[in-house]
Amino acid sequence: MHYSVYDASGKLRFESDNWPMARSALDLVIQEAQESGCPGDCPRLEIHPF
Image (cartoon, rainbow, N blue to C red; front, side, top):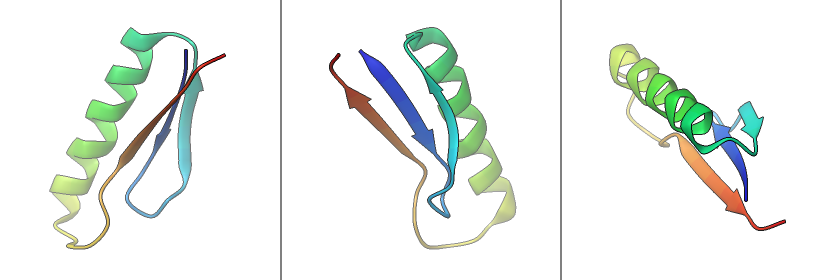
C-alpha cells in the first residue's frame, strides 16, 4: 500500500509505503488543524494499492 497525507488546505504533507509513519503524519496534520481553529476542510489520508 502507498499512503498520502494531505493537510486541510489540500497540500501534500507526506507520502510513504510505511503505515506507522503515515499514521504519525496524519496525527500531526490533524493536531495542526485543531490548533489553528480554522473551520472548513479536514486533513485527508489516501491509500493506494501498489
